[in-house]
Amino acid sequence: MSALFTMYTTPWCGYCVRLKGQLDREGITYEIVDIEQHPQAAEIVMQANGGNQTVPTLVYPDGTAQTNPSLAQVKKQLGL
Image (cartoon, rainbow, N blue to C red; front, side, top):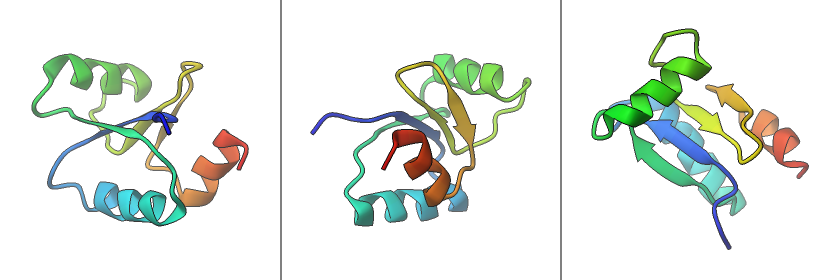
């Protein structure tokens, strides 16, 4: 199954770790991009968050984004 969205994250983000675990348990596939390793990804996150590098930021294929969403919010966005 291909990724349903891209999660922008950092290795030290506790909220990211929690959301990844929840998504994995649900079998929801996603791509991970570490904004500390990819400066261009940090720009995407800043655009989605009014200039802030807030993670996790999820960006969907339709261009919409969610910042630090709950599992329920992600599932709603995906229509699950």
